[in-house]
Image (cartoon, rainbow, N blue to C red; front, side):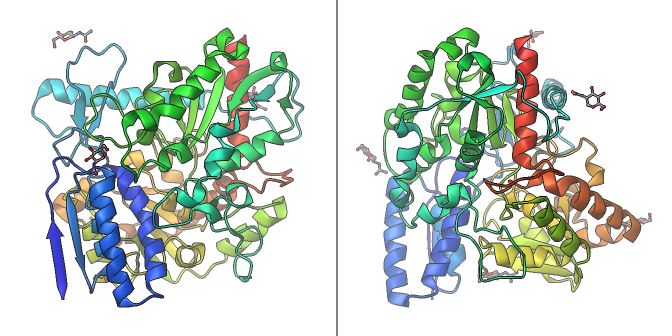
Length: 547
Ligand SMILES: *[C@@H]1O[C@H](CO)[C@@H](O)[C@H](O)[C@H]1NC(C)=O
Ligand SMILES: *[C@@H]1O[C@H](CO)[C@@H](O)[C@H](O)[C@H]1NC(C)=O
Ligand SMILES: *[C@@H]1O[C@H](CO)[C@@H](O)[C@H](O)[C@H]1NC(C)=O
Ligand SMILES: *[C@@H]1O[C@H](CO)[C@@H](O)[C@H](O)[C@H]1NC(C)=O
Ligand SMILES: *[C@@H]1O[C@H](CO)[C@@H](O)[C@H](O)[C@H]1NC(C)=O
């Protein structure tokens, strides 16, 4: 029996809804595998009702069939979505870059497709704007790179203080306290345990020490816990070069994603935060320029505007007063210079240099039985998605391992990492938004990521990944896959084993330590982790601002 209910909705799905769906459908699946079919149907009905009535009211696709449980749940909650939608775009192949450049007199926001070959229109002015947009992104990244510091762990903090605001608890701790009600179908609390690392993975000697079931939205807690213990922390605001605002904006927005509340309700806490900050002396001194927020979700989640058709998200980052601070995010809005991307958290949180070294040795020696692997789910109706093509290519090729996230538990460390440590290349097509946690999971497994879109990593992480992306990844334009049906496995066979090994050594020995978020009590001497790199660069920028 297959039931299919479809509703048309007026606009493309937003990536964030889909991101949500990624973890919720996996969780639902885990749960469902243990309960009866009858209960399953009841839950489906419940979900269907709740989604169609409380998310946005204009669900595109609601479909389910008893033989494709996961897929259907996926449809249910997220339908399909173009990869990089900002609402209001009517073209699935493009995404909208609002206010691309400061001072542009374009009356309409610019739309363009994302890819190395951005020019798809025969309109000259449009092409020009697209080229200009890419130039602007690259300029921002150069500015960000100019703040790369070579500060070492042993260095003293003279003149480089970090002041951490003691915010009222409604801005952080109280949000954590709402974890059980944050998502209707899942208790989010376990992910927030261990200061954001989630549950420890113990009964598993396979990986070694320092592994947790970490959720991709946990950066706010991880950074906050670390910054409180930072050796450069000061308690006198006059000694500070940077001001850390520990607002859990991601948790704030997460709690409204699946509830029918007005925009005023969603923005309430953001406005309170701005009011609170404006009363602080350090804020007034520099209008927030030396202030930093770490937000654990993607930038678009905080960029709802009055023009947005979709009620998705808050408008935190669109508020005028929020333009000056630096925002550290797992995915930046490419045309905002003060958005800076940092790695998605992985499952690995080492406590010592030795934890890192043991892992490096383990994966460099790993027997990589699969030439290529892909862990993911198809995106049912996204025309733009190359996932379906990749899945077809992969599942019909003996050298490619497909981990079907429509039926496997892809949100658990073990299933993903097991595949990645045994693969030479890991395919990383864009998903619900351009960036993927999976890119970082593959890097820390020594699996060379194959990227199809420059926004997945190259335009995101100037502090943690080198400008020369050939050192750590293979790029295959998604257009070539889509339009020419390029065979990805064959293309990868052209990479010599020597090139492969060079890349892998670079990834494992040079990049890996800087991509992980170490334990809250870690003592690292040899390595700088992703957190240390971020803070060192912020300190360098802060010092330059002050002089
Ligand atoms: C959301 O709430 C508003 C106000 O209570 C109501 O008018 C609207 O119908 C609700 N939307 C949905 C989809 O339930
Ligand atoms: C504004 O738009 C007009 C017409 O499209 C163009 O000629 C002019 O150069 C633009 N000005 C700026 C500052 O971009
Ligand atoms: C980084 O180190 C190099 C060589 O040790 C030094 O010349 C340079 O000034 C340092 N850069 C910064 C920003 O400290
Ligand atoms: C992945 O799993 C789903 C759900 O079980 C199934 O419908 C689909 O055919 C699978 N895809 C492949 C390529 O095996
Ligand atoms: C592999 O390399 C050969 C020789 O350079 C070239 O002719 C071929 O087109 C390449 N294949 C792919 C899939 O890139």
